[in-house]
Structures are given as C-alpha cells and as structure tokens.
Image (cartoon, rainbow, N blue to C red; front, side):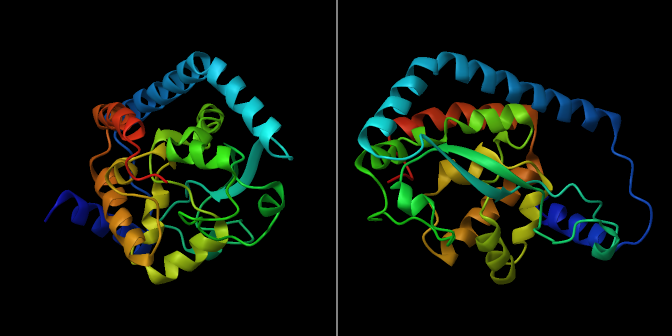
Length: 242
C-alpha cells in the first residue's frame, strides 16, 4: 500500500471512529512548528524583498482600471475539527468543509466583475480579466498579497489551493476524497500547482486532488522547502498559468 493510500485509509478510519483522538507524537509537533516557522520566515522575507514590486503593481492596478487595488474573497481553509467526532457535535452552524477565511489578491478583473457574487472559475480568454490582470495572472504576481494570509495563519506557502465555498461544496460531491485536502492549511503554491495548470474541468480537479493528497501523505520541512524552490522556475517559465 502506498503512502497516499495509507493516508486516505487512516483519515477515513478516523472519520468513522467514535473513540478518543490519538495523541500526536512530540516529534510530529516539532516538525509542524518547524514547518510553520519556515513558512512565516519566507512570507516576511518575501514581503520585504518584494516591497518595491508590490508598490509598482498597486500603482499599475489603480491607474489602469477603476476600483480597489486588492481583491478580497472568502475561501475554505483548514478543517481543524476532530475527525473522530460526528459532524453534529461541532458548533459550526454551516459545514463549509473547513474554516472560512478572507484571501487577499491583487485585483485582476474589472471591478464590476469582482462584485459579482457568482462563484465560477476564470477561463483563459475570460473577458472579465484586465490587460494588467492578465500579465499578473501569467506570472502569478496577483497572489503575492497572500503572504499576509500566511503570516496571519490562514495559509502556508505550501499546501492545497483554497477554493471558494460554493465551488468547494459542489466539488466535494463530485470528486472522491476532495474534502481530505482540507486536513492541512491551504497554500499559495503546492505539489499540484507546480505539476499541473489551473483547473478548467472536473478531470483537472481529480488530477490535482491526487497530487494534493500525495503531498499531504509525505509533507515535511524538507518537502516544503523543495516545493518552494521548484516554484521559482515554474513562475519564470509561466508553467500552468495564463
């Protein structure tokens, strides 16, 4: 049985169990803290080094398209609930699949489109995307403000990409094991992001879920560092972006 199969089997077993939760080994606690420190240090360093670029992008967005510089949107975050407890025992009124949080991005669409409450994927030829926004998306520069989400604890640098609540609710009924990806903090980049393009179909989602669960099964300090280092050439060569 592969590490991915062991992971999914273990989680399913926890979700069916009704006994007390297992204690997390101390070594795992240390590893988790080390990874968290790595993510925060990289986020702070990234914001400091990218400060001139952030200012330049902010001016470009403001001067070329009316509307706010930043785009805020609710996404589904980590599911920190004890998987051993039945859903009815949790206090959350609505089961979003994870803790909702507000994600920050540079605005890449016309302000009127940004105000549209309908939650849909963007497409390669989406008319809502501004010329500057298209450039930002191509190099994923619109995602730099998410470093603030990392510092706040909503996200890590590395992890599954967070989805919009309505899309998440739809996908978890269509894609097996989709909700398992919420057992870790979502990320700006990840194993799926450096190996696959933006989602355009359910088949794309299934492929990326397999990659996300593969990452979760072997997540570690060194794995996060490797993915961070591999993200740079993906950005430079525009792999998986449009």
